[in-house]
Image 1: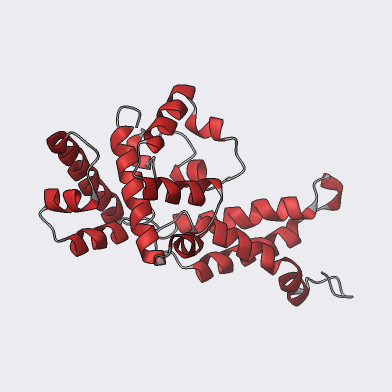
Image 2 (image 1 turned 180 degrees about the vertical axis):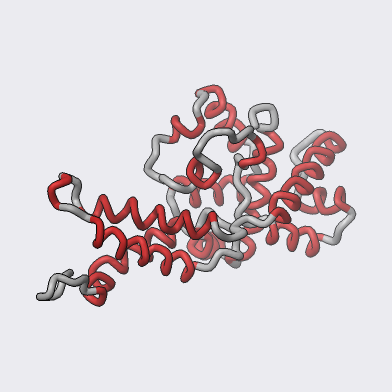
Length: 237
């Protein structure tokens, strides 16, 4: 990775660790809305990689790849913090959908179908589906759901460390049991999407291929499923 003069050989570094950086960026962007560009995350990650190569000391005991992974992830998160990674309109659209789902449930006495939710909003089905598209990147738990007086923000707690024990994130076992029950009440197709996305770690395009629909349609189903879950879990979040 270094030249005979002891300087960083960036070409060699890109060839050796570039795929790792791109893989990390691809995993991260799957949890973010469509306005975040993969190339921007990759570029930030490469800066983190070069920083890691400059700072790494073999006598610290940690393997370089472990050290570099932390630097790369940190650089990507810094890039997200410095940009409008989740516009307010995303949360606003999701809350609109959640309210409509709740009203439709109360009116119908059952889980509302997509057409029922569109009717509740007074929108044509196609317009409601565009609203779902705009809500891409919505999460079950938002920063706005909690007072955030600590050092860690939403990014740190929900996308920074995918290898963190989920119990540390969800905290209460009763919450987890309630969430499992709520997922079980989802319409079959939405339940399949959530299972393939979160359990099997398939991306939206892969799920679309399995279900025979477009990637955009899978994104809509995911946004709608998250809105249903947030409605069901309102007492917790």
